[in-house]
Length: 203
Image 1 (cartoon, rainbow, N blue to C red):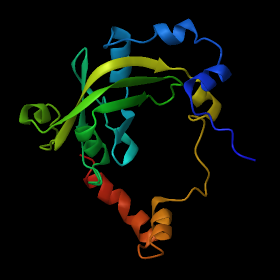
Image 2 (image 1 turned 135 degrees about the horizontal axis):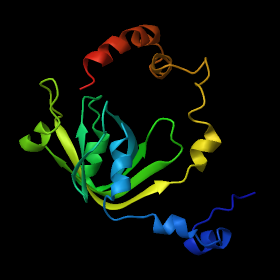
Image 3 (image 1 turned 45 degrees about the horizontal axis):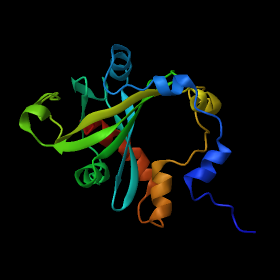
């Protein structure tokens, strides 16, 4: 039996025929408000979503303070600290400025979303804003805000995300690398070496 795919918006609307709640529409701002500013500045972690010719990408970003900086009420700056040099997110933003950020705060069931347009800067003054211990990000993503709004808490509440830890037998990064390279990479050695290597290259 063929899968009954939904290929047009009219068919989708016929299934979701209930109008959005007023709160879900009226919560949307076009720039930072005092409450949205306070929430985002409390977030040390976000997921950055972008799109490019190769497809979509979702990438985590984290810091030990606010994960983004406010340049003005309509603009955020996200430093690109040390990573794996794939630069998938940056490649996407350079070619297609559409960007979305999902901000999270530990223990909080709500999240805050920002949709907008991004550009990548290597400007010295902008990079210097984020300097720490003599280090600077090599680039900074500057996001022009188009929408900012909170995401309802149902997803986190359903998942119990903040309730305890994952399973004890969850595969490690080393386990996955050993599988993907058919043993060419020693997974146990990778896992043993990674924490010290990461601690030296967080910024």
